Image (cartoon, helix red, strand yellow):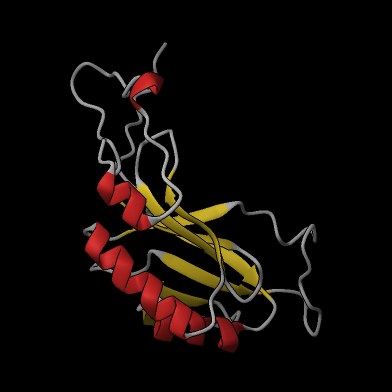
Length: 161
């Protein structure tokens, strides 16, 4: 039996972080989130639209740094959609100015979306993306033979899908 649940977007993601204030600064000043609320547990709720929160920061163990492979670092990545490749280029330039190093830039296969990938201060993978394929009425994804991987934003623009 098929599930009756039909999700349409990521509602919110919460992360354990080693330094809440450092992370608030990164997500608000670098990625443009707005702070919505803080609770009595030290959690900070952030948004990038009109929903109360789309993202949250949860204090990790008191005084402990969170290291890769730590039990609190159990999250793969969060993808944030931007409007266009032009916006990705602007984001790339801004992030470079702030010393952010990229793990990936360009277009991967599945979804054929154009992306920038980098780490936040705790090592979580963040993806800025646009032009994600849409799956319509026929429930079919683009055939793999039509994927056009690219190793830069410029290459993705020069070789559109």
